[in-house]
Image 1 (spheres, one colour):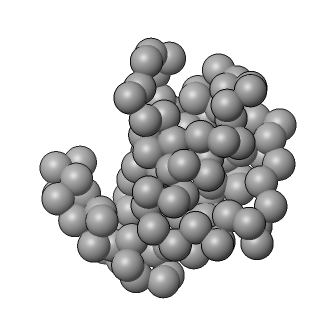
Image 2 (image 1 turned 30 degrees about the vertical axis):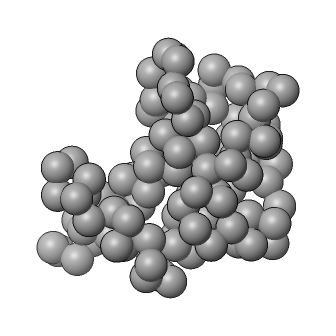
Length: 102
């Protein structure tokens, strides 16, 4: 996790990593019964834009099920959208890291 924390904003600049993260966001939200439009999602190129977009998507219905799927604790976050992006990006990072080591 520590290596990810240091490098994840740099990883975000890589198109492949960003695309895989977008796909994972769509999948996780869908599992929680929340539909995210792929084209709208991909318009958010920066982490800040994406976090703000996700905050808006869940503002009226944060769904504890979504937090469970993403593996976030039910607690107060100063920026829930950013916490969601970071956690999902970490899942993508692990998947890429372990698929490359085999």
